[in-house]
Length: 316
Image (cartoon, rainbow, N blue to C red; front, side):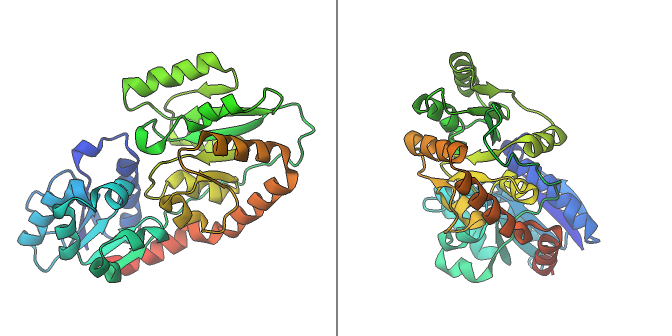
């Protein structure tokens, strides 16, 4: 098939959605398709168009539908689509009506779609291939437990919540927080630098290559995902593949991957609850073991063969 993969330029080349678009281009090519990345529909007679982000791609994707009424139109939903834009954006609703298939990045997202659209929706959790993290099995070492926060610093990710949680934790609790990811605006950069200057337990190291991030995942003790809204974070999939425990805000995008009964949740935008879960991880060995076992049980969800099988089905 000839597939156009639409990633609007206003999403930014550094965004998680743009990274996802490049991942999909490689995946579709590995399935034998001819893939081209586009920022706007250019009149090409493609067999299929995969539009990333319903609201931001809507105008261009609908142009494709008018030009290629027999083409296959597939819409990949992001977190801001599901949890912010859909309740108030008519154009996004229109695109979902015209789509042949709708993809969410985690299972819980489907229930946020308009009811008529749910029948043509499928959840495809992003796959990951990682070495296994080497876990500390006890707290006998004086080395602090290393919590990772990975992703661009922005409002939707509530990125600095773990840094704020350190204020509620005694210095006797052996914890460090390492934040990896660029600040998408100057305000977040100033705040991250201020936290780093205020508390030596917090380090912000900015944006780094995927290889560097993978290395840090293998060296970490736990990943923290404090998002206010989340489409389905690829870094959670990488943590699962590595066997790294995850502490996550209880929002749909995290629950849709980790499951409703997962033990490592804290309340969204709740500094004290985030601190409580971090402290429990640092001091409660059975809790750490339980999280590791639950993460290990999720490994089949992020196998590349599963993602390839589901995308092959959707594309065909």
